[in-house]
Structures are given as C-alpha cells and as structure tokens.
Image (cartoon, rainbow, N blue to C red; front, side):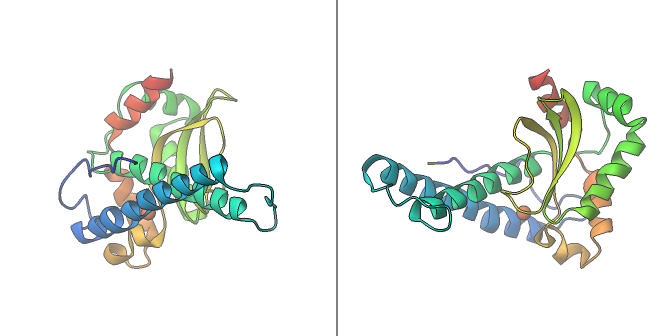
Length: 197
Ligand code: FE
C-alpha cells in the first residue's frame, strides 16, 4: 500500500484557499494514491498468474493497466513534490539559488522563465536536475504520463491544471503562478538539490 502524504502545512497557503487544498489533496491526490495501488496490484496478479499472451499495443488488458499505472504513479509523485514545495516564504536560498543564478543569469530571469513555462504548459512545470546533460532544465508536461524526461530529477514542481487555482483565481492563471512563486518552500528545493549533488 502506498503511504499517503499528509499536507506539510495547515490552512491556506498564500491566496490558495483551504477549500482548494482540501479538494486537491484529500480528493484528487488521494484518488491517485488509491488508483496506483489498485492498478499495481492488478498488474502483479496478471504478471504472476494471468495470461499475458494477448498483450497488444492497440488494446489489451496489460496495455490498459500499464498506461493507467504511469498516469496514477506520476499523479502521486508529482502532487507530493508540489505540496512539499508549496507554502514557504518564497526566498531562494542556498546552492540551488546560486546554481540557478549561474544558469539563468539571475533569479528574476529564472522565475520569469519558469512562470512563462507555466503559461505554456497544460499540466505541470518541473525544474529538474537532468542527470544525462548534468544541467538544470525546466520541462513541461500536459498529462501526468506525458512530457516527463527519464533521468531528470524534480527539484521544483508546479501544478497548473485549473483545479489547482480556479476556485481562488478564476481563469487568472498568471495570478496563481505569481502567488505560487511568492510562496515556494526553497529549503525543500535546496534539500532535493543537495541530495543529487
Ligand atoms: Fe493537481
């Protein structure tokens, strides 16, 4: 069974209301955890005792389960990284702040680019350490299991699906992104960065 992450804070975060967070964490995120467990236990049974001879790329039980698996697993991981880097003071600090300054010219330039990626994405924006290129990269994703790059380790994750902000910001995604940036928990981003370097 996958352990559900408790929110690392209580109450509203910036302009993101308790109501939004309750819906986002207790309903949507919790739903991905349950589906992850359900689909992975079905895969275990099929792999061990089932008939996989009908596996097929157009449609088969195995294909449906494997497709659902990456959607649910990434839905869990991405939301946990998002909740964990939400609700801080927004003050970049440590070696990751230095590395971002070196890479993007200044922290303001990094934040401007990250925010723009949030307007370009349909689902997720991920600042990652790309272990192939050994460099900081921002990748965007339109669905949990689309757009991710293997070997890229997430450092800062932003959810830009409408459910993350619509109750508090309406259709004003730009305002949500600015509020998110103003409340990043940079100590968590630094912790992730130190773990890989
Ligand atoms: Fe979400």
